Length: 379
Image 1 (cartoon, one colour):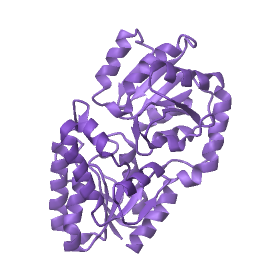
Image 2 (cartoon, helix red, strand yellow):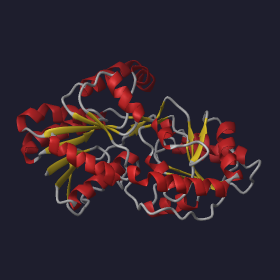
Image 3 (cartoon, one colour):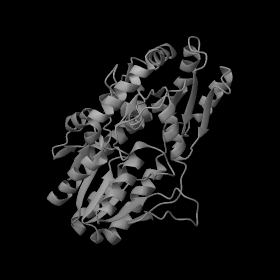
Image 4 (cartoon, helix red, strand yellow):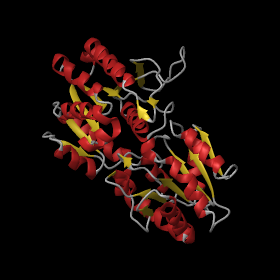
């Protein structure tokens, strides 16, 4: 089967659950003998090109600064959508399947505009579906335009994949009438039963430093928790528009040498950090899945999440078993959640390892891959 994967971000040049999903999916499709093309923006230095076994990576747009003032810029998605449109107009007949992320939407419209011309089957991943109210909060008065574009994509003829019960329901609520397959597995790592390492007194964050992730909430929470556990430290991996605010808070709170924010680092370093951490702290108000929660649990490391109407990651957490669900991202609430894990660190590690061992098959990307390939064949 000839498959075209479409997403404007690309691992390892950007860090996030969606780009890891498309890389892992592409690797597995190629390993099964399918022909795979990955359309993205150029995230690597000019003159270089990523070489992936069995995957043809095509940049259909230039390198961009993706964020401004903590929000996604409008220009990169527009340029990416036009690049996808141009590529599919010329080469769409090469593909049996075009499989795109819903966000940032214009790639969905580009694929829909060329689908009838070339006859490929269109599949769309809906990691998130935003309400009209959230669009207004995100973009102000222009949010209604974003909501209308999302609505137009929802009504495109497609086969939809969702990754949570939350956004499956919301996709229906927003008017989707087609077939939806809910995929539970995005984890592409080893499925062995965890053998937890003794935890260090360090909490870890890994992801983009964007407003929705609320990374600046972590240093004050660590400062508060250190009143009870003076040895507690934090390692905050990743980059983004909020990183400068994080670094400023570290200085203001006198946490130099206690809270590290090294930016983007090798995947192996993040993996090691998750394995030895007391817990992962992910204070996001909005998550489409929360892959890093599963990655932490694969080491027996519990997570601290924050309850919220747009946080699908909470579907991965059993409070008191593989982590703690805080009711807010304020310093007291996050610190209390961290301290709760610290007080029963070994018990949380054992129960988190058991949780992962019990759910590992459904969490595996290979389980989702079976559903995806079956859907590709069904059309």
